[in-house]
Image (cartoon, rainbow, N blue to C red; front, side, top):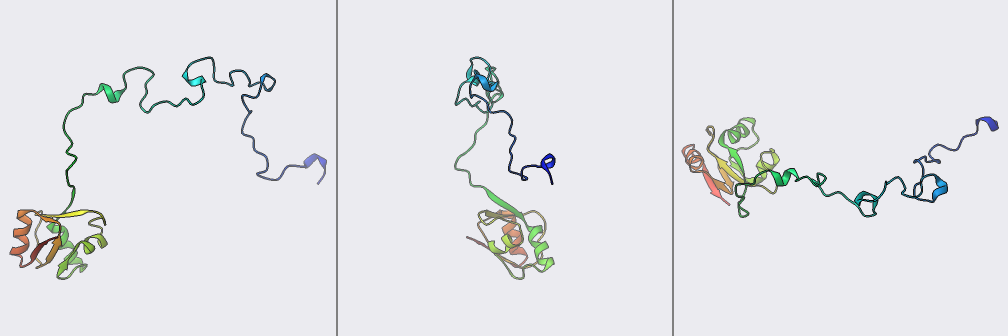
Length: 150
């Protein structure tokens, strides 16, 4: 080691570019690289989401229609054939509850569950969930099972 190959420790020197706005002598004083006048030159400027330079934003140009019911209750739909697959795999025996569906990734822990009539159910299951369609309830009872609403 000698004076020709001395270097600062790794990570101790930060080269983030030239400091701006510290007087004319720094070479980046005056307008501090922001140009002259206008909103972008001022402190506190932040562009609004969707701002298009004064042009009518897309979100306001596109026509609005339809209706969203704020009281709508969303259910996670599970078909009968999904329940039959669980029986075939041996994941459930006689009863199916919300916990069984969560463990087998058919529903989330905060989901409301509705059993739908898609597919065929052969096993006599005692199913306890939030809702059933009429066809699902009929198919469960035809297979010798029981549909219990929570």
